[in-house]
Length: 306
Image 1 (cartoon, rainbow, N blue to C red):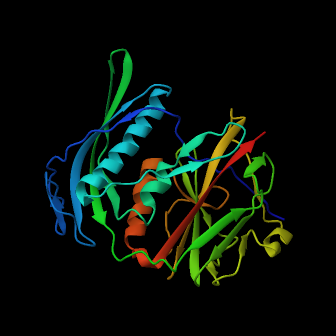
Image 2 (image 1 turned 30 degrees about the vertical axis):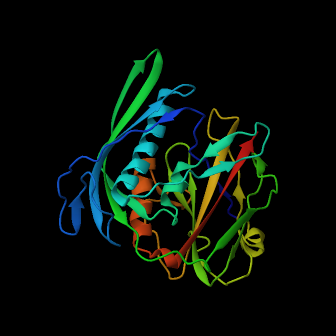
């Protein structure tokens, strides 16, 4: 009986002080249906897209250079959406109550969530700079991005709940992971995992579990009891040289069937996107084609230890 073995690792950030600055700069028109951002420009109409150039700036104390660059990129993305749409993105803060009681800022889920009224669907290569001010490391990210306004309004009657089979959300290497999902409407589920090495995988549906339509107000388990009986398991593992890590699962429920196609599959049969930046853009391209009232999201963060 075949068993699936994988590790699901989230991108996360350590505490730092943030100073965000930015100014919309004219960007070359990229084609019909798009406009350039300029200071004082009005918000977009639903479905309209606009290019904008912004710069973020962070104080990098307590972070590695790579972590600081990643945080600067995330802040630049937020700033791009705020500049174009004229709205402030609320910080999505999730508190993980484990041994360290650390706060996790899940920027990836924050910027693709349906409550954010715009999505970045294309980016040019970010330009990073680092320097010191009064002996404090400073990191900046200059980003040119295309921001598209969402279509439709949120549907308060369409929600999806997600819980895991470990109540404390802590797993040891080799433990089975079982997801339990409860949608408020009949819908289709697509489940992603975000890896700390930059990959994003489509966890469900997959080759062994292709049926993703679920019934309203009924708990749906992944893997199901039937899957487990056939030897299908999601077993926790750590990346090489890691003795613990944080992970995240993201569930997107849609009222109509909306397959997420990557064109790339791993050796264990999972579709995936090989880079974090590519995954961020591809997910947003997919989501912007689904009206906000026709989808709902849920995410859970948890820990794997040896």
